[in-house]
Amino acid sequence: MAAHHLILGTLTDVITGETLDDTLDERHRQRVAKLLLGDKGYEGQDITARFPVTVQAGERRARVPVDFLIRVGGVAGMLIRYGPGSLVTRHRPTLALARLAAPHTVPVVVVTNGRDADILSGTDGRILGSGLNAIPTRSDLEALLRHFDFPKISAERAERESRIVYAYEVDDSCPCDDTICRLSGEERE
Image 1 (tube, rainbow, N blue to C red):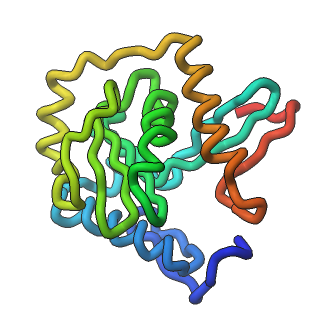
Image 2: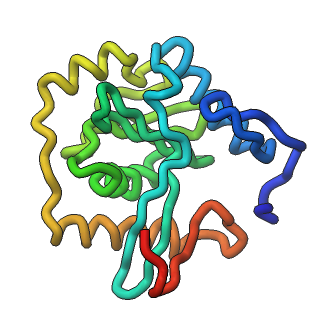
Image 3: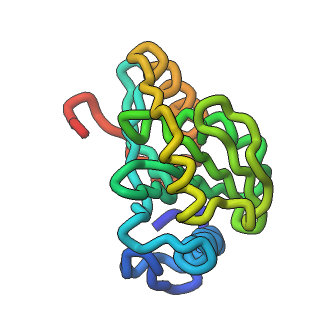
């Protein structure tokens, strides 16, 4: 139990059916999940909630969860990361995660605080849209994926992106944040 969150009881994850702690942050995540399953036309099997990405900075390793990784036709097409407050401060680490979460750059990156959203290009970080309504529908994402080149990330670039995520999400995390798993040297993915 994360000590820095007010636990209001439990709720059921609309994607996985799991029972989760009912926090204000989780309510925002569930609102986004309902939007994806409803208005945006995604199916439960398209969405992986709390997708773990292993990052490393030197000898230090950690597993950082991505709120939603969306695959259409088995291909990772969109990554969504929730965080309270300012969206702009979350752009860079979320773009870095989009370059580590799949064998290719994830083309669409969404940074949201549950009330607003910035939709970014995973390849170059430019803003594609703003607001929750700008999140691509399943059919929009399918069309985009048909014309996407799926650029691979070099090992050197992946190392730099991993260090960025580690700095933002692990080094700068609250000590009582239980969503990040710090790994010892002996543990493997």
